[in-house]
Amino acid sequence: TQLLEQSPQFLSIQEGENLTVYCNSSSVFSSLQWYRQEPGEGPVLLVTVVTGGEVKKLKRLTFQFGDARKDSSLHITAAQPGDTGLYLCAGYGGSQGNLIFGKGTKLSVKP
Amino acid sequence: KAGVTQTPRYLIKTRGQQVTLSCSPISGHRSVSWYQQTPGQGLQFLFEYFSETQRNKGNFPGRFSGRQFSNSRSEMNVSTLELGDSALYLCASRYLAGSYNEQFFGPGTRLTVL
Image (cartoon, rainbow over all chains, first blue to last red; front, side, top):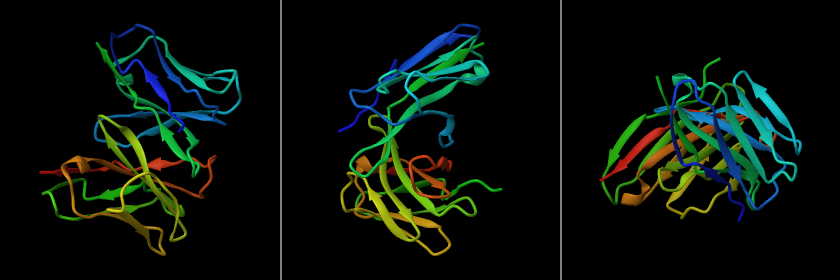
């Protein structure tokens, strides 16, 4: 069974701090996705990383896909209260090729 | 373009009852997937429908079922509700099935089983 482990589970920081969230697996994924979910809403796709070693930047967010395509990280620079939410990584796998999610990192950025 | 809509947004049921949740995908999207989200297990895949046919199914008991209509709208049904079925049920649509097509999620239906 393919699993995605996210760490840390919870993160509470002050505005302006930097942070990194990790997504790890013992399995190879053809691609990994990162979502952000706010309370009362469904997840929203932030980025898809496809190539091992790939780095993608989205304003203050930097996403990296491991060389072996088994792990990914999300780095936020100068976090803002608007970054607060649940960050989920996901990849296609399973016996039917469905989307598998990690359990998420709940980020709280205090002003 | 309207997003994915789910109805109802909140639902309270008692053990043993059954429930039907509805999902209207983005116009033109033919694939609808359902997920269950709980604090303990996170987001887990229930099933995916494409062109009225179930394409994939996750590891959930037969009490969980679904269907898709010719207009791509989808419903999921949970029979003989258990306390552990309390969760946020999310629906996601995409234009085509297949791993490189982005899924768009609805806001979810919060089901509470008493």
